[in-house]
Length: 262
Ligand code: JCQ
Image (cartoon, rainbow, N blue to C red; front, side):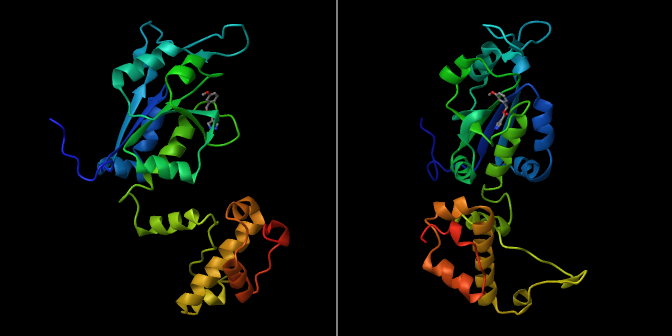
C-alpha cells in the first residue's frame, strides 16, 4: 500500500545523517542553540553515526597508511561502506573536503528544499578514493583552507541549512535570507544609545520616514557590497539604474571600478 503523501516532496521533517569518528563533537554542538531547538521540535531528524561502530578489531581502527607510501593516514573504505549499507542514510550523501564544490547560500537553499541529506566527515590525510568514486554523490567544500577533519564543516552546513527550514527562526530569518537572495551584503544596524562616545546613529534611522529608511538601507547595502565584494555586484550584472538612483539620493559615492556597466 502506497503511503498518502500530503504536499509531495515537502515532508515537514528534514532528516540529516552525519558519519564521523567524532560523534560526540557533532551531537554536542547539535544539542545546543538553534539546531538543538529544531531537533527538539521535530523539524530536524538528526542522526549521528560513529564510523568506529562498523569496525571489528579491538582497537576500532578506521585508518591505515597509504599505498605507495607517504606521510599520514587514510580513512579505510570498509567502515564507511558498512555504515552506509547498514544505516541507509538519506541521499544525497555528501563528502566534506577542500576538494569539493563550494558550499554557498544557494547550496544551503537547495538542501533545505529537500527531504534530507547525509554528511560524511573526512579525516586524516584523506579518504580511500573508492568512497569518493563509488559511494558518495558529491563533495562539498566550505572554503579554501584545510581543516583537521570534516566535522566543523559539517556543522557549518547543518546550521546554514536548518536556519532556512520553516519555523526554525522567527520572521527575522526571511528578511535576512531575502537580502542575501538579492546578492547584497547587509546594511548597518544600530540600537540605543543614539549617541555613543560621540558617534551618532544616522539621522534618517530616527526620522520615522519608513520609505526613506528602506531606501537608505538599500543604498548602504549596495555601497558596502561594491566596496568589499565587487564580485557579488558583477554577478548581479552590475549596478542597475535603480541602484544608481538610490545611491545618488543619499549622496553615496562608490568606486566606479566595480561598476560592470561602466
Ligand atoms: C571542508 N573546506 C575544507 C580534510 C581531507 C575528504 O578528505 C578530507 C577532508 C578534510 C576535512 O574538510 C576540510 C574542508 N571544506 O578540510 C582533508
